[in-house]
Length: 181
Image 1 (cartoon, one colour):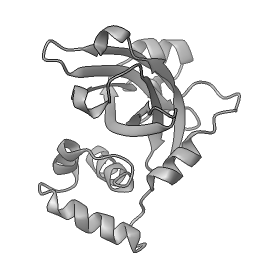
Image 2: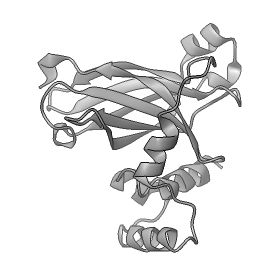
Image 3: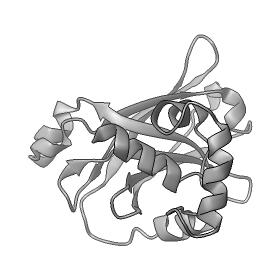
Image 4: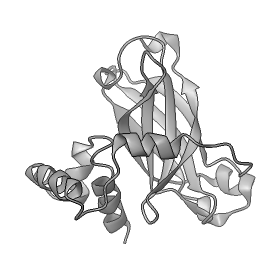
């Protein structure tokens, strides 16, 4: 069930962000299929979200609902890669989010998705804070190349994704430490 939902999420988000490693892991071992999936999505045969639709739908967060997550840390590995960690949940369902979309703000302040982070890391602190056992595996971590984010002071934003409803929920933002770039 988990792998099926990961594959569904990757197919839905092919127009939002490229994730070649997870695509070959969950969808199909060859990236040639990704082009066919994009074509089928454009033709309306597969559910897919465009980057514009994702950002338009994901940017509204003016509700009084509990937070859908948090970006805990942005750091740099010894190899110069960025490590981004946090947690995300689907509060309406009381479960951990399967996937989180990460974006940086470009020079005009517009979010540009650059990575996906799949959940599954234990977060007993989140369970304790919200008194919801379904949040146990809400932790996520992803490592990305420093080349995926342009140099300069950047804000990293994230959204919890619900593959079942194709909805996404903002989980906040964090300013990247100046020492990283």
